[in-house]
Image (cartoon, rainbow, N blue to C red):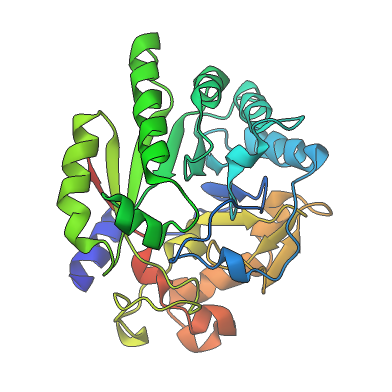
Length: 309
């Protein structure tokens, strides 16, 4: 399996550098979350939680629109974006701004507990390209253990309603993905999860567990540096906190390694600074010269997924 995963990623170009500008940008629109999931380290976060200022958000979007409007832009990094559904500006305003700027791949990650009927309609109207919904269970009991603080029945009803509303409105957007992080706690429910959500018209995303750079146990991460390959997140993704700090990669959620500040520099400048040095080390496979957080991390094995539709 490790060799097969490596070859799959290599064929898809996921192990090559994005070049002069990132192919994926993660924007920390809000770093608050309404759940305390077992496979997440949000509850341990030490950096101050906040909401990205509108001026910083539009600066980032405007540059992506100039540089590469086809880049994938996630309007979430380490929080629940639907917390902003009733703020001014709201998450729907952010999506609409990004789409009006010309971005072609604007996506959102959510646990869908706050995805009521009004939010579903506004998501569709905003022009969002894709919505990834973390559920990770096919029973209320398992959901309660892994998605702590959430409501399984409400979440399922919210997603089913969104799918039905898309059909009613004859809208192709957003593409809806339901995600299942495969773990010991939920592995027996994987097949039922896939069958149920395929029947309802969602695309199912099955992905491995990550350790968030060693902060939680992930027994699936069994490979060492002798079998290591360049990390997708390091090679392709620029992750920006709500204060504008660009961090090491998508699992550096506590911003332990600051690579630049997009309030002071352009995304292009930050991407071609310390982060370029990091990409070069990965491309040379010179693992001994990686920053400590990256050197000890095994999550490069988990930057992949299987899809069922």
